Image (cartoon, rainbow, N blue to C red; front, side):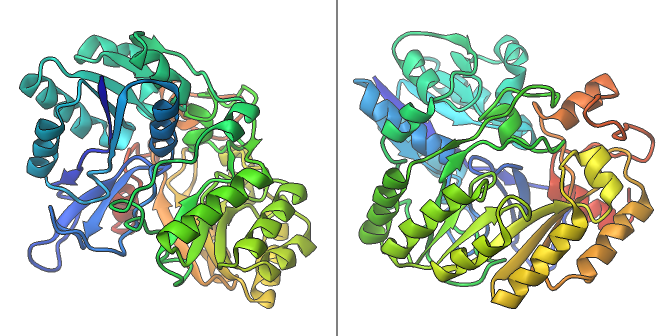
Amino acid sequence: MKVLFSNPPWWVKSEHYVQSRGNVFTAGVRAGSRWPFTFLSRSKPDRFFYGDYLPYPFFMGYATTYAQKNTDANIIFRDSLGLRESYRTFLEYIKTENPEMIVIESATPSWEHDSNLIRRLKRKWPHLKIVVTGPISSKAEEIMEELPIHACIKGEYEKGIVRVINGEEGILLHDLLTKKEMNAAPFPYYDEEHARIYCDAGSLGGHLPHAHVWSSRGCPYKCIFCVWPATMTGNDPDGSNRRTVRHYSKDYMEGFVTELVEKYKFKSIYFDDDTFNLGNKHVIHMCEVMKKVGVPWSAMCRADTVKMETWQLMKDSGCFGVKLGFESGNQFVVDKIVNKHLNLDYAASVVHHLHDIGLIIHGTFTFGLPGETKEQMMDTQRYIASLPFDSVQKSGTAEIEGTPLATLAKEGSLSAYEAATIDENYSAEVDGKVKWDRLARGEI
């Protein structure tokens, strides 16, 4: 059996964007992005431009090599979205390779597009077994009823896809790798064609090309909108279940990062964990790894999960910048709506410290949360202005299937998010970029 792990193209015609120059294309990012969204792309169909935001498709990459190791199937990987292929090129590739099974990872923002593409694939190749994975699998029952799907796998899908290749079909529930299995698994998929296309450097400066890697899976925190800990590395759609973290070992990470740098000549490493710096021990281990590897690095972090002196250890081992999630500059919103458990005064002191020791600081914030007032959003703007960020990400809060936010929208209230309310001031939107643009224009 030939099995294709595919991240299909996602090109969009959207009235939400005002095109300031001719022949501009709206593209999406899907697998690899915690919150898939669309944006004006410098790439065009079949004309790839390096430098736009493009994350490595982590779950897909790990599942590809896991299936190669644990099945007899002929496994192939194609990130058509990452390569910015046209639909014609994508379909020609499928025609040429003629897989018997195709695995597609999807989420709410791209689902209308992806479901139409799935129907198109099934019409052209009725024999093709289509497997759906990703956050959209939170609505697996509905998907199986409405679409010609062979299987729908919930959560991270290494084990699930092996079971499907070996004959199972239908809905497969969460079956996560144990920490031992995770550290015994092969490194995620890379090849010469794909390795150096991924990019997430606009906020943290140069050192390109860089590799996107995980040093852990999962996050114990329960931010209302956060997708992967609720849907992929856990099963917690309402914020009431326990969420866990599994770290890759020091030896695993040293072998993986060393191979990436030596084979593909990456100039830096970006740790795109849900939260890289969960505890001093893990961070110290990664600092030791990066000292040996000897290339600059950056990471997605929280402000409050390591000791203050650990930031300097990171800097000394080659870390040049961090992304920090704040979500809001209003403490009530952080506590009662987002449920982030972050003290904003302490977080501000960390930002000043990072600035003082010379790290690049990128702050991430979201607007349009359920129950959030205009004045609270202005508090966020004032908080941002008060701190020495090098760059800031402002996005609209996207409502993605499987998250507590999506559950709140269905049920009206959630005990863990006591001030989150779906009222006349809340605007539901699955694409955070579109929502932010509408907020900025005053439409909502």
